[in-house]
Length: 250
Image 1 (cartoon, rainbow, N blue to C red):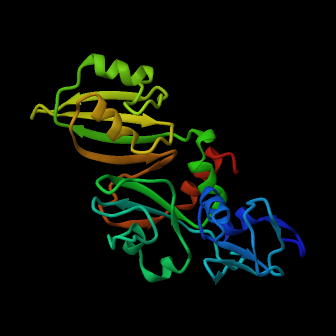
Image 2 (image 1 turned 90 degrees about the vertical axis):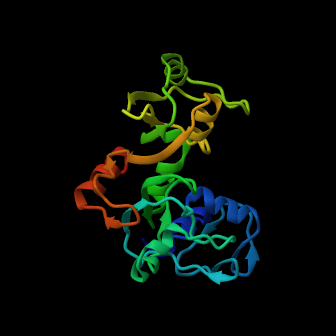
């Protein structure tokens, strides 16, 4: 970065691995970020990396320019939370990583709730995080959802057409196929492009379907494959290239 180049405060925090761009906006607007001793509440405030002093929650924030970008795929197990720390003391996804990776300020991209499992990306690349989580990009995410009941064609049609949730939210159409199992349960293979909180669980609730297992198996071009629950691996160079290309960053 050229000397004296100004950047937006929210981008500065995201590049430093403090939070996603939207998370940085929330930190700034809540008054938890200071620049040169003054609280700043505008995400667009300009700062000069290397010159201005930035504090978040009282701790200094470096520009992040000296930390190489890292991209980690984790098979999130159930009974873990998708956060860096948890006030309730539950195990977080970051605790599944070794210390050398934690030191790189990796943050989970998006959410998988406490009882869900599957593919989770952790990175300190703020722009990749922004594009994967911002609703306007509609990045596809694929899930395998095992439900106890047989699923009717009517329920499939409702999901495919775009259903309304009990709370009043209107959902975009979901790609879904149903595979009956020998036990009478049904495996749903679903592709979502929205970022509605707990969308699959709320859809199944409204359709009177009982979820037995919910697992994310794809995130854009990334495939969970045979990565075991609780294990992680670094993305391969070809995966990083494909991911960035799918986000318009190549």
